[in-house]
Image 1 (tube, one colour):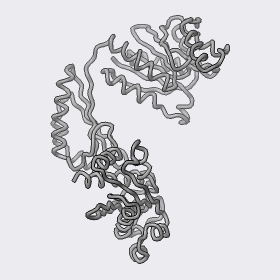
Image 2 (cartoon, helix red, strand yellow; image 1 turned 90 degrees about the vertical axis):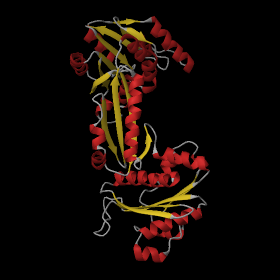
Image 3 (cartoon, helix red, strand yellow; image 1 turned 135 degrees about the vertical axis):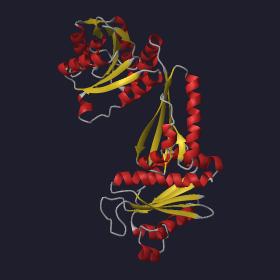
Image 4 (cartoon, rainbow, N blue to C red; image 1 turned 45 degrees about the vertical axis):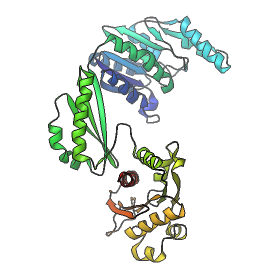
Amino acid sequence: MKTELISIGDELLIGQVINTNASWMAQQLNRIGMDVIQITVTSDDNQSIVTTLSEAAQRADIILITGGLGPTNDDITKQTLCDYFNTRLIFNEEAYQNVQTIFKLRGFKVTEVNRKQAEVPENCTIIPNPNGTAPGMWFEKDDKIYVSMPGVPFEMKPMMSDFVIPKLALRFSSDAIIHKTILTQGMGESFLAEKIKHWEDALPPHIKLAYLPQPGIVRLRLSARGNDKQQLQKEMAQHVHQLKFLISDLIYGYDEDTLEEIVGKLLKEKGLTLATAESCTGGYIAHRITSIAGSSAYFKGAVVAYANEIKENILKVNHETLMKFGAVSEQTVSEMAENARQLLNSNYAIATSGIAGPDGGTTEKPVGTIWIAVATPAHTIVQQFHFGDERNRNIVRATATAFNMLRKELVG
């Protein structure tokens, strides 16, 4: 069954709000074998919404709509749906009881504006909304299904999970779709594609590979479709095993794993601790570590040594080192890591020093030159990288690379 998602709201079109609803909904639909063929964003305008619905009906069998169901004048979806389906708004007692319950729990009286939330198109089946006052609405016309839901994520998601997805799954049988994402670090997309070309060419027609690069990592997503889910999972495991044999040095995890989570888990399992000394990454490595709940068990702390005087006075980098080799050098970043490990009494330390950009580069040390060091109880590993000239991208790539350097040390 072909499905289209329509998101309504001027706030989406002007970039004020990111359309996270559509990506989440697409994931849920994909799990039950529903193909999302298009995602459309349209404005809070009657004619635009009607046109979008009409065009979607030419492409899709199931049309899921979010947004525009609030109680204020700019929320016009209900009335527009009445126009589209040639019907009228009627008062729904079940929906009104939900409004009363919500207001009672919050200690408020139902206003006339909120009472209108219980008015719904006459030809719809309402979808309960225990988390808000706007009910969802299920329509059927010309063998098409239309479902309208609030744009507020914590109201929409339970409707999808508890009502829409189960009803669609019960009504329509479809092939199983499974995905497996292999996470890699240390090689760019084009070089990686060349390395695994023969493996990719040998994949059967019902298993597709997608390259999903982002700063510092490349995700390889395998997607399989068929009528036997267990057989698909078995095949997928075999292909992943073959890939692991080819690029085991590049794979750091699977699916929703993150490098900071993997590193944190390894440190915790081994009873080891970590500190960071950051210059060009400006504390971003420490931020990523501390975004993980429970990281206090293994993370000692960080020194953001942006200025040379901080490298020298706090991290005790030798003055002669800075004068002779500069802040962006193998010698400086080595001392930063080793001294941070001693200063913060940790087993391991990561240090970064570089030129993130967009300016500050020289012929000898162009923008994107970054040194990363990992100090261990036995030795210090230092590597130089040239990441490019985009500042934020350089910071993210350096962070991912530093985590992977540490991960490789921890796994031996």
